[in-house]
Image 1 (cartoon, rainbow, N blue to C red):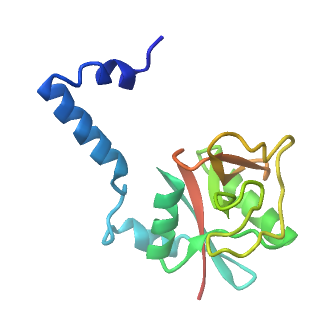
Image 2 (spheres, rainbow, N blue to C red):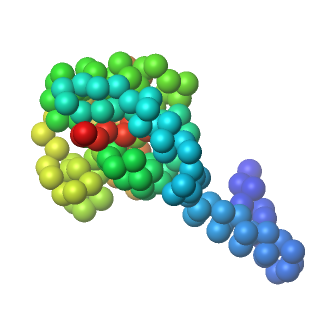
Length: 167
């Protein structure tokens, strides 16, 4: 069975189809919220404090790049799991939402299997699901499931996320 994109691509000679495909491609690259979006301020007000840091689960589904950008707009970053206590706290926060997974900070895009935070610091704490990370093709980002376990996934996936910041 062909995908919808493959079927649509077969009609790219048609100017209307070509224009619509270009529009869809452009829309897919656009952030879901703008810099002045009031959701940014709601995120800060909904935050929960733990060990001097603030954490907020954001239900709006975004790619990992969009989620990281969003967290920066609220003067934070995607949550970095640095201790067992923080892992337990964030796992409880992830379990409260509608989506089954949330982005957390971590990538092995620079070197397969060498997991680090977005700023290049090596990750020292992990709670991988069985058979994870599995080094799947293009799986260079990390999600935490409701059970607190981590999986490596494709960074283009859209899911909820957790922002963290200090005051």
